[in-house]
Length: 324
Image (cartoon, rainbow, N blue to C red; front, side):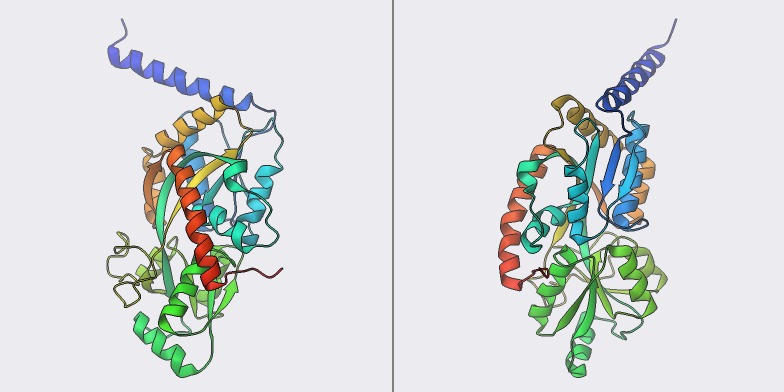
């Protein structure tokens, strides 16, 4: 006679196995997770780790599709253009849906009206980093050096209208210096140029920056949270460094098109929540400097609405507009 543990184990396996066929039944194509960053970048690595964790939780094998550029607009467009019978979802940090529609004149989508949240799974601060072009060891030293140079300092970000761009603009105004934005198609190429000495500074999510800071390849001068990052306790916040208005914490969630039926959407939410108990996923998120945190779909939607309102004020204040 089977033991209670064996019965429960078989029941769980059967329930998990039932999920994947249901999701695949929504369409003939392989399920896709669209990520708006280059391969190898922090968002890409998060997406691949999450996809694997959801598969281990009972989901279908999902292909990660990279659509970098235009501060996330191309990734959203790919989701909007996906076949109606395909299980296609989008991994997006909050700023891509709250800032991009406000800063990019080519953006025509309404994230609240056109997307529905599967759920959120992590949060992270923005880091201000310098490479070999800068000798600064503190934010104050960086400000002093920029003022003494009498010119604008090049500051890379993951794109015009990205949260890193916003944080750099907030710091620029607070410090009374001039930073020349240098937008990239995601974090990976920006960090490569920072290490190569093509730009002096970078503002973006912690991602691989944590490892590079610990190895001494780059130096994080400040982070944008209300408290010090749990991954970089030796680095002060902007507030501690004398810039109390430079505060921003990002979150990342998975979204589906508004047309996705309730049943597969609920299954995806269940899989995402279960994935946050997956040790390999948690290890990847920790390595990337992001804090695992489940955010239910309703809370994601409320947070998105709130961010759109607050980001509108920031866009007007800091004039974060992409070129038409």
